[in-house]
Length: 432
Image 1 (cartoon, helix red, strand yellow):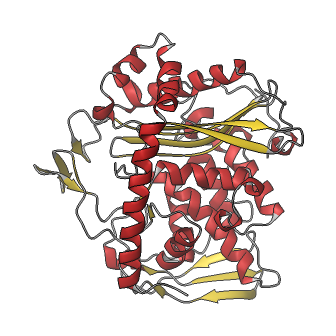
Image 2 (spheres, rainbow, N blue to C red; image 1 turned 180 degrees about the vertical axis):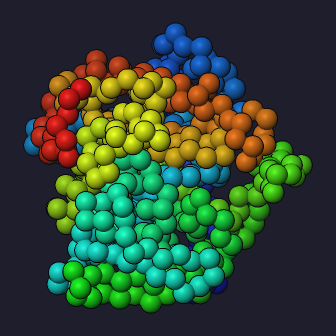
C-alpha cells in the first residue's frame, strides 16, 4: 500500500534525520577508514591529486571505495571506506540516473508477465501531452525498430540521452520513485528527462507506449500522469550564476527541481546487480538470470566491441574505449587492456563528473567497487560550457581509479575470487 503524501513526507523527514545522525556518528567512528583513501591517493606523485585534496570542499569530493573478499565458497563480503560521502551534499547526477531506470525497465517487463513480451519486443512510443514526441523506428538497431534491450545497450555503451528518456516514459515518475524507495534507496529523486527542456508538468506526464511482436500487439500503456509532486519543495542553490537564453543571470542556480541520487545509493544499487545474492532480498531488482547476463555484457562492453550501431564507423564522434569509463582511463584515449573490465555508469553535466563502477582484473583476480563525484566549475557559472573536465575532473578520476587498482593488486586476500561469471562474450571479438 502506498503512503499518502502527508504520511510519506513526515516519514521521509524522520528517516532522513535518523539516517543523517547515524551517518555523522559513523563518519566520526570510522576516521581510520577515511584516512585509507587519503593515504592511497597521497602515495602517488600526482599534481592533480595534490590540488584536489588540498581543497576538497571546492571540488565537493565524495568517494566510496569497497573492498571485496571471498570465502572458501566464493561468497563475497564487503568493507567500505568513505571520503566526503554525505547525502546532504547535493550533486547533479546527470546520466548516472540512467542506471536505475535501465534496471527498472527490465523489472517492469518481467513483472507484466505477458507471454511473448520481453526486452527485445518492438517498443513504439506515442505522444499525448504537450512536449511529447513519437518513436516509430530506430536507425541504430539491426531491425531498425526500437526496443528496451537496444535502449539499454545504448545507455551503457555511449550514455544515450534519448534512450533514457524513452525508458523514463515507459516507467513514469511514480513507478520509478516508489520502486526505488520501497527497495530502501531513499536518497533518490528521478523527476525529469535529460537534454530536453520540459517543465515539471510535462515531466509528470509520460508518453503512451505499445509493445509488438511483428504486427501483434502485446501490451499497450496509455499516458501516465503522476498525481504527486516528487520534486524537492525547497530550493537547492548552487554556484554564482547561469546562462539562460544567452544571458547571464547573476544568481545561484536552483537544483531543487532536478534529479538526485546519493553516492551511497548508487553503489548499493551496483552491489545489488553484481552480487544480488549478497544483499537483502528487498534491495534487489526483480530480474531474471538472463537479465543479469544481458546487463553484465552491456555494462562492460566497449564501443569498438559493439555492432548495431558500429560506433567505430561513426566519424561524427570519437568513441574511444574510455568514452564512458572515467576510472583508470578517463583521462586517456588508449585501448583498455582486455583483462580489465569496468561495469559502470557515468555522469557528466554542470561541472559534475560521476562514475559508479565495479572494476575487475581477470588476470590478477582483482575486484572492487568504486563510486566518486567531483565538481569542476571554477567560475561557478552554469550552462556556459566552461568546466575543467579535461584539466582536473577526468585526470582526478583516472588517477583515483589507478591508485585504488594498484592498491588492490598488492592487497592480501584469504581466498582468490572465481570471476568466471563476469567473463562475457561481446558483440565483436576483443582485439586490444
